[in-house]
Image (cartoon, rainbow, N blue to C red; front, side):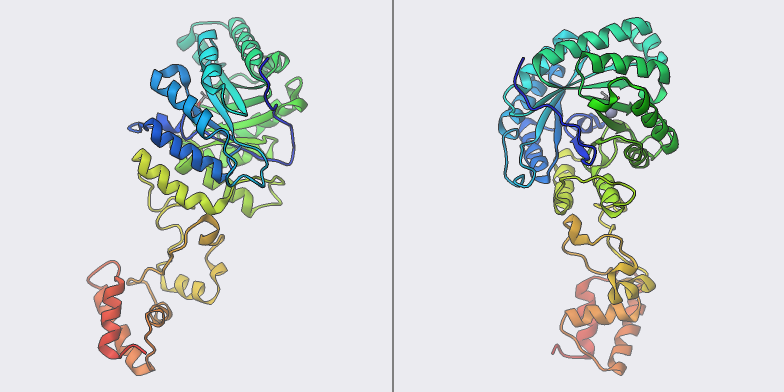
Length: 406
Ligand code: KIV
Ligand code: ZN
């Protein structure tokens, strides 16, 4: 058996498993070349990701080579991970067939820490129509796959695809069997983003309580966003015992995407009493990482996207701007700096008030008496009626008309 560091079950640690390069790359229209994947993989390592799913090696020669180069070039990196004390685990995906599993093992072989992630559908719908096998055959294939993977690496993850719509008792049976065969992580995919938060949380709880050998393994969430519930479901999974989350940067992924890493980490970060776990993510790298993934993948980040959207820290209304100028916490639950956003300015537009305009003028070096400032404010409001937001150059011009810079 290959030497490898086995997953330790630490009930306080939240393992961050990034699948931007695998499930994320399955976003319609996204295709990353090998150099781009390596650049993203290195950034994930600096970000503090614990496990990186680098790809699906059997899918194509290109995918195999990309996973292999990531294993060699990003796998051993320690820069930025000194506090974590170990390099990122490189994981490859495999269906439950010998060819997939062997190809995957070959691709990740040079990573100091490596994992094989095997999956097989367990819902009756998938068994009947997609795989055309019965439950008994499903258990046989899952056990054989995990047994083979375990003979190649120590760290084996198993995913019952479409777990969110699988029969719970059957799920417990399959999962108990794969734990016996050597799986160290059980990932529970809501493959089609169907579950509600209470439903997904209760599924995790049921599995934690009923899978044989559950105390020796890590339960993992894997949620899709078809109903816009991926983050809520993931958080519910953590509250019910999951200690690994499968996520992507910006929530990229199949159809409506996967759970966004930045949302889950910041939710956990801001609510320590709800989530008594620690993570090793350097949150200050979220914004630059989001921009990198967006630029390389061609997937635009919506302006109102939580945490990393262009508007996430912009305040437009006068009441909010006034509050933020007095104390940022009035309208900010996290600081922009804590997620790497450094060039925040108040957006000046028709909803802005006097305080925001005066503050921007002061930043530009203008200090007017009340009468002159009143004229500036009137000019500003007149300009706002003709456009959505007023640019700094225009603000400077209005102030300059009334005064000279001090
Ligand atoms: O959504 C899913 O079921 C998957 C599996 C391959 C883990 O991505
Ligand atoms: Zn998925």
